[in-house]
Image (cartoon, rainbow, N blue to C red; front, side, top):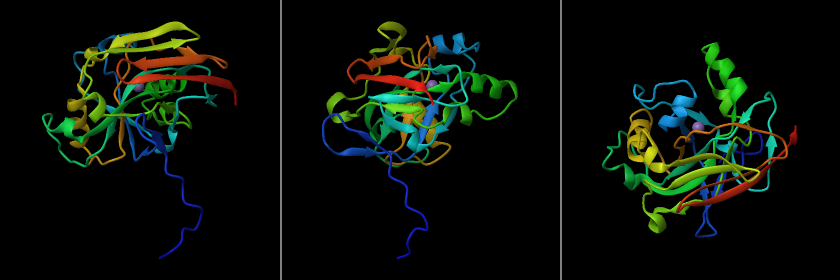
Length: 232
Ligand code: MN
């Protein structure tokens, strides 16, 4: 067996609420504009768009507690609270009907976004990667297995900054359901155990500042809380 030329990367993983085992992160898919209210606040028409996706590196996923560094290259770091879907079974071209069988569990995550970098990318028709895929850009709380909570399709999804409500919505406002999202992603690439899907954010995205405390949750799944550090 050959050895690696440099130290092999550490497998990114997420805590599991009901056990000491961890969920290994393979890939991180993110859905754009999946709540009508957020699509509108970003200046888009929610009725005309099929789902679209972008990705974060697997090691952008970090525990949603303690301190998250304020990233470089931005002065407009935005919070986007999202329900995170954890995939537990492989599949390609999965039907909407079969999609729930591929879900292992659910969590609460934040799609941290360098909004100024994203605005510039949109203006210049460039990719979003630098706006979305930076280090620690995907804080994620402990996952809850489907065996505990089933498949939540309604329930409050919210985010407070320093105790003040910023985002408040309901899972039932999602334009594309989790099953439809899985069907769409798996029509493009094969999904596999370890894949995470950030399923979109409701309205109210806004800037975070160094020193802020972020608290967020999804009813029935859990709550997360972390601080934003000073400028790095
Ligand atoms: Mn998002």
